[in-house]
Image (cartoon, rainbow, N blue to C red; front, side, top):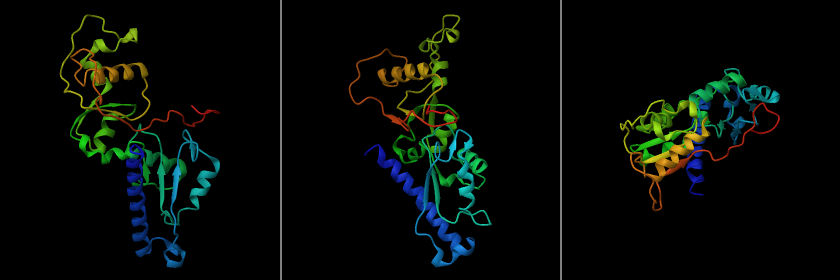
Length: 245
């Protein structure tokens, strides 16, 4: 429950904003006929995205038609609507823009909750130096969430070129020494699946076993190790393929 509670607190905050926005719209008459109190819905809608509304970038046929029924002639939602997704490879605004294009209705970032959204609440880590793993604009995502000191896997590779040796084509051609210009890592954030699993896994293990100081050798670490914040531990999703990926 400790893992889930930040998610639900963040989700509650998103839903409350939509309910508040809905109330303001009805008060100023922007909801058309629905502004009449007897037509006020006593509910909101919470949608998953992948495999429910879209498969990859292709909308499920009935989804686009259904969403046309959820907005008034001015393009405003007539009931509070929030979207949740395990995806963590884009900013909320980017996901909102994608959904707006796919579903044909205007969707704001305040209506979208990504797997990394609850990290806004982890303020005690915002001033620590954190390593982020995933794909997409991971540095921008982390900074948008409030993290001030962010290091990527690629930055670690460049600073310590001898640590990433699985891909022979990326091995240093000449002997090299570490370029020690990175601060000590104080926490690790997993946004989602990386592209190069072997690199990410190796460097994260190195960081955990050196307590964030990659200039040292592996040590027998006492528990607890450095904080490891996993945004999405579900590795299965539905896209255009016939079976889940």
